[in-house]
Length: 113
Image (cartoon, helix red, strand yellow):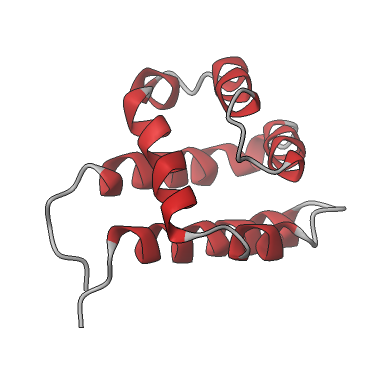
């Protein structure tokens, strides 16, 4: 059975949360926070990334933080996690690949399997 966009994005978001928790300190709750979001919420978040693709293309941390902080459904721990990743150069490439994945998948017409 094919996955919905929402279930795929949520699965990858939870995976990203596990990775960030593993690579940083004080982020152990992040995977659970992401798991607690609905598929609709994560799809809307991915939609915001897709609408603001320049943030991803230019790897603009300030613009990302500004955008995410204005979204009412984003838990506060997410901003802390972005700051932790930003502070660790070795995590940047993978983080931005996740952002690219979320923005691309939400605009995809393909069936996810």
